[in-house]
Length: 383
Image (cartoon, rainbow, N blue to C red; front, side):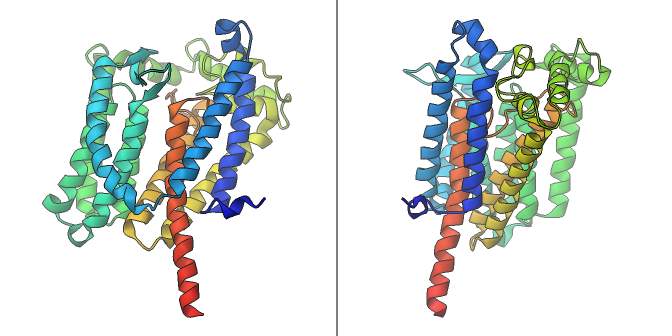
């Protein structure tokens, strides 16, 4: 049976998603042993079944979303952006707390939780792409274009910031990149960047000198100090991650033979890249980096081919967000950055985070699918 009769869009991206998902299933199954002994009496099968189910439903989401004309996402973003702010605020006040961060809401009637920032991130990127596309005639105007776009960015990022600084920073940089690509006035962009740097410095100073004055200030201060000191006891997770990578060598210890999964608290999520290298070697790590770069290249190519500004912007915005997040996760694993708590897209164990990533991939493929339809239409006309 020819699957390509049913799936459309960029085949390279489909291939990347399939390969990363297979890596995810194998790596998660191997890395959850410590969790299984702690909570399931050593039974890893329940984690495997749950994760495989989430990956499978993620593929269904990609399939159904990529069948939707991407222009509808523009309309949906208007509602989504107005839902995002109240959801984020409610999460801050009444959400589930884990690891001193309040990021999760329970899905009614289930044991599943989801990070409202995942929803808000996708909603904001799509909304900014919509606003940039419809404001092209007045894109250089401060009041008509800059303010209507920047205000929602500021509100969403500020609401995410207290519980998830790294996500807020990635989202801000993604939106900034979109505004740059969208031909917004350079002076306005410099003003925005300057304001972002100043706000960041103020938060850093407050967190360093008065860590209890802002939410998670003490955590941020500790992470930066531990990273700067290089002390092995203070940087326990980073040290275990480096040991995993160093002992993996070129070819790795073999699937299921990781030792550091027993010591890394977040072996199946934040530090899964280190476990992959330990078991499958540096070659596997290079291949994973290559797959994300392929995703970036194909996303940019899809954006360039799109006939509509909105299609170009959502393709590049979502692609940049996913790849940037992946690079940050891998940089943390090799101790180039302090611990951020960012999962590795399409690989780390997760619930609704995988589903939102799948929706994002589906949106990119929807733009690609529309490009293919337009190309075929043009071919018919010329012949």
